[in-house]
Length: 166
Image (cartoon, rainbow, N blue to C red; front, side, top):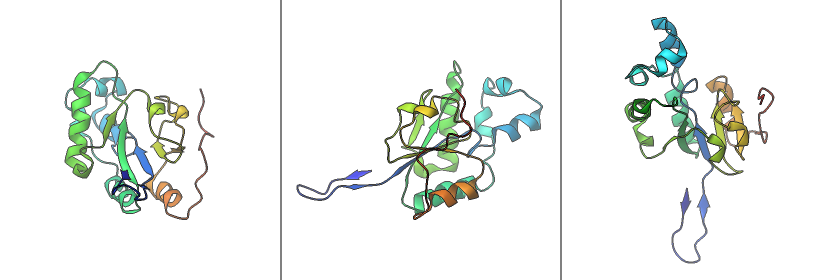
């Protein structure tokens, strides 16, 4: 976030963290498995995203990122051609992370987001053009490891591309 306090004032820039929803903060798989559905069936089910639970510890982890000084944005890919999923995803964020109500990005191309100073946290970095993200791409596996990498003073590699295949 750029804060400009007038002519001649220094600009203060916060590092941004773009956080994926499904598989990072929302437990899509738990919802799907509990109902014996396929992923495609869940994506086409009205209201499904509203009923999905948060991944244990995810809400606190996102708030920890904010506490570390990151400007956190939700960056989620909607299911193609399912218009109500857009509103359902936004409503989920409003319910669980209301402090991010003006920081919801719904896109099919996460490579368009951010700059070289930013971070993208995604569990499926081979999807939604994540590999074109110019900042640090973190392949999400769990919150404790992700937070450890992002704490001030932690060495964060330029990209986490070991598991990305085109």
